[in-house]
Amino acid sequence: MAKIKHADRLITLRCSVCKRRNYYTNKNKKVVERKIELKKFCNWCRLETTHKEARITGK
Image (cartoon, rainbow, N blue to C red):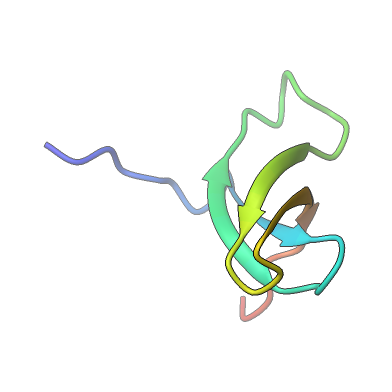
């Protein structure tokens, strides 16, 4: 079975170079209070860049 991502825990990760939203993940907001920063591969920059947590729009 596929793992379900709940909407209240869902966050997007945005590339710090090109500002595109590339990844969706979830976090436990009760435990982690700061914004998440991860090194991920950006398909548009073709580099491994820092991706920061961004707000989800469209709600």
